[in-house]
Structures are given as structure tokens and as C-alpha cells.
Length: 328
Length: 176
Ligand SMILES: Cc1cc2nc3c(=O)[nH]c(=O)nc-3n(C[C@H](O)[C@H](O)[C@H](O)COP(=O)(O)OP(=O)(O)OC[C@H]3O[C@@H](n4cnc5c(N)ncnc54)[C@H](O)[C@@H]3O)c2cc1C
Ligand code: SF4
Ligand code: FES
Ligand code: FES
Image 1 (cartoon, chains in turn red, cyan):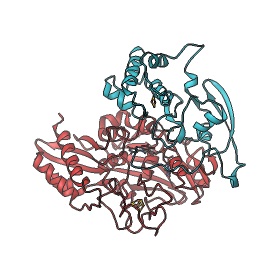
Image 2 (spheres, chains in turn blue, green; image 1 turned 180 degrees about the horizontal axis):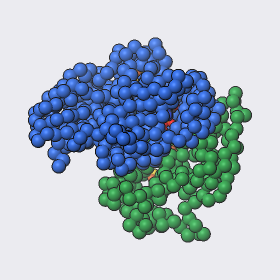
Image 3 (cartoon, helix red, strand yellow; image 1 turned 45 degrees about the vertical axis):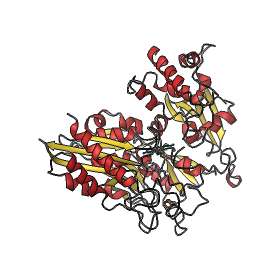
Image 4 (cartoon, protein in one colour; image 1 turned 60 degrees about the horizontal axis):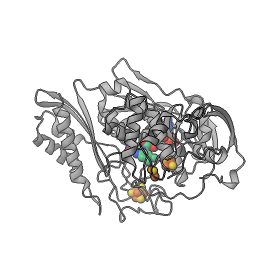
């Protein structure tokens, strides 16, 4: 692994000052994605700013019912937090389906939001990749693309966003708080990850030197239940082929409000407003769920090896909805 | 094993020659002993343990977080030592497999692995045992086989000794 300089920050101001808007510097939190990327020679920081000592490890219930999560809260601590288990079970389930115990013990909330795609061409410096090296071409478009995205793709990049946690957050609704040279700003979670379009190298609305300090979940929907269903090649320690986070509030037998987000199929953690519209006000029946699944995947585009993901995602949506509406 | 193939370009112990003099001093506790290390920032904890401290019980499998052979405890929680830098652990308490036995007495988890014959080649065993130690008293992990298998899924056994590993973990947890 190439070498770099190392600095340890004690608070947020020191972290952003040490980073200093320098594009050859990176923050390091758990390191479970960054160190992997540096070993592969995909990320080449000249300087790392260690943020692990920042006082961002707390989870706080706000007066308006929202839940404010520090950027350094580990995936394990978030998944087992009592408010998350009680009010946001879909997020707990999503996190616990991801990675392994060891990785979740170390992986942080902000690091998970920022993790890079697992596209094997992106991860191999000998291959063309528009995300890694703009203009070099996309190895996956004509290559092995079984694990690639079917929603939100472009003719430049079809890489899937790998996170499970982010899919749970997408369904719940959340706000990211970002601290940088220009001060503090808030951004809706849904707008944070960017579609590849013509600039697949731009993955987030984050500028050099900016630090995520918190993710704040919206107040829970009154009376809603949640469920995360993840389908994959093996039962554990594997990324999603298709996953669905469903949050549903019923009014008798009718759906009062529904949230649907998808993983394993989108170029970003995918919120399906189309599926939500197809569910809203409708009876909670399999027929309704099928319509929602069709609506969610109507715009899907398959490549050589990944057409199976379209029916798979539809089945994930129908099954997640059946599970979440059957709980009582 | 995952969708991503691994192409490890070089050896983590060879810092880039152009930036080789930037060592950092870290003081930490390893198996109860205070240790001070002078390391380059790019030395992962796994290599610091094996190459600098001769603690070779912790194994390197994939070097990318995909196998669990390198599992150690950091402040009591299991972690992959291949994906964390030694310099990040100033003041931390690290436990490796060498720290399990006390005064010539095997740790109950080591006893359980012996008793249940929970290994074949043994390469994954240190990691398996460290994961077991970290979940011994973790009430968040259920006592049924499915919960235990899920919690242990970050430790791959190439020999497929899973059945006996599961028995060993279950027996150690039942006695803990
Ligand atoms: C084998 C393996 C399997 C996995 N399986 C899954 C899975 O099934 N599902 C899943 O969701 N994930 C999975 N993961 C990914 C894992 O969840 C991420 O590696 C982890 O969440 C990253 O968090 P971290 O704190 O270690 O980040 P780091 O590696 O420390 O950082 C990642 C990135 O985030 C940036 N960063 C960190 N903190 C901040 C901050 N506060 N503000 C701005 N930028 C920041 C860093 O600069 C870096 O670019 C897997 C990982 C591995 C290695
Ligand atoms: S899909 Fe995206 S990340 Fe993968 S090779 Fe193509 S451009 Fe690169
Ligand atoms: S060597 Fe660390 S997980 Fe494989
Ligand atoms: S005993 Fe050989 S790898 Fe597990």
C-alpha cells in the first residue's frame, strides 16, 4: 500500500482545518472502505486526517421527534440503539444485513454513506472506468455486468450503490449536516447521492474539505411498520442483488402512507416515489403490491447479464410489502 | 468470493520510498502489555502485530475485509485488523489470540474449539475464536443456531469446518 502522511483531529474545526480543502487529503473514519481502496491503488491520498476522536459518537432524540445520529456512530451501535429498534426497525434490519459483525463494529455512519461502488472494473486499476478515470470508458457496459444497476444508469456508468444502511435511510427520510470551509449546511438525504449521468466521478454533493457531522432521521410516520428484505447470492456477508426497504402505515385495510426504497439495483440508494404513489390510498392486497412493483421498475434498463434483477426487485418489493402489512 | 476481485498490488510493509521517513509513535496496550510502536502511517494493525511484534497467531487471509482470518478485539469488540491502521489506535486495548490463555490455562473458547474439533487446517481458527470471544456475553445476539451463524458469518473457513465451529461457539456461550 502506498504511504501517506497522517494527522489526528480532536474536533470538527480542527478536522476541517487540517483537511484544508486539499484534494489530495482524505478523512479516515473506520477505514474499512478507504484502506481497501488505497490497497487496491484506487484512492491515492497523500494525507489522511483521522476523525475518530471527534465528539460525533452520540445519538440524540430531538424535541420534534427526529433522531440525530453522529457521523462516527458505528453501524453496530446504530442498529441496536433503542430508538432505532423501536421507531426505525427498517434501518436496524438494513444495517444488520450488511457486511459482517467485525466490519459493522468499526464502520461508521458517515463512512457507510460515503462508501464506493464494488464494481470490479472500478476496483481494478488496469481496467477502463469512467468513474475512476473520466473519459477512459466503462468496462462494465460491454463486460460482466451481472451485479450492475438497472435504475438510474447512464451510457457512462452503470455501477450499483452498495449500501444497505442508505436504503433504510432513504425510505425513512433524513437530512445530512455538513461542515466545511463555507460553514454548516443541511441537505436532504435524497439529494445527496448523485446519478452518474455524464459525470460518474461526482458521486455526492460534498465538496473538498467538507465533513459530514450528522445524519438526522425524519420523525417516524405515525403507526408505520417497516421491513428490509435483502436478496443475495449467499445468506450473509454479501452485497444485495436486490433489496427493498418498505415502511407502511395502514388505515384499516387501506394504505395511508408508504415509503419504498431499493438497494442492489440503483446507481444510488433508490427511493421509488412511483411505487409509493401506486400504494397510497389503495387496499393492502397483493394486487396493489404488484402494481407498485411494476411502477417502481417501469424505467429499468437491463444490460447483458443483469436482466434478472428486474423481476427479482419486483418480487422483493411484493414480498417486503406482504411481510410489513401482515405484521400485527 | 464477493463480486469484487482483489488485486493487491504490493506488500503493505514496503512504504513508498519517496515518503518513507514519516514514522509516527503510537502507544497502545496489546494483550495487557503496554507497547510503543514507531510505524509508518500505512502499516495496518495486522502487519504491525505480525511483522513488528512477532504476534503471528493473527492470520492474513484476504487482506481486504473479506475473510475474518485477521480478527482481533479492539477495546473488546471484534474487528478486521487488515483494514485499520496501527496509528489509529493510540491508547486502545488490543487483544489477539496470544492473549486468550492465562497462566498456562486455555481460555474457555479455546477449550471449546479443542473439545469440538472445530478446525481442520487451523488457518481461520484464531479469527474464529476472537469472534467467539467478542460475542460470548453479547445478549443482542440470539442463542439459536441461525443467530449465531449470522453473527459469525464474517469468518470464512476454507476447510468448511463450520458444523463443529458452530457447536464450539454454542457450547462456549452456554457456559459463559
Ligand atoms: C467485505 C466487505 C463486505 C461489505 N458488505 C457490505 C454490505 O453488505 N452492505 C453494506 O452496506 N456495506 C458493506 N460493506 C461496506 C461497509 O459498510 C463500509 O466499508 C463502511 O460502512 C465504511 O465505513 P468506514 O467508517 O469504515 O469508512 P472509511 O473507510 O473510514 O471511509 C469511507 C469514505 O468515507 C469518507 N468519510 C468518512 N467519514 C467521513 C465524514 N465524517 N465526512 C465525510 N467523509 C467521510 C472517507 O474519506 C472515505 O472516502 C462491506 C465492506 C467490506 C469490506
Ligand atoms: S460501471 Fe461505472 S464504476 Fe463500473 S466500470 Fe463502468 S464507469 Fe466504472
Ligand atoms: S485478512 Fe482481514 S479479513 Fe481477510
Ligand atoms: S480450518 Fe482450515 S480454513 Fe478453517
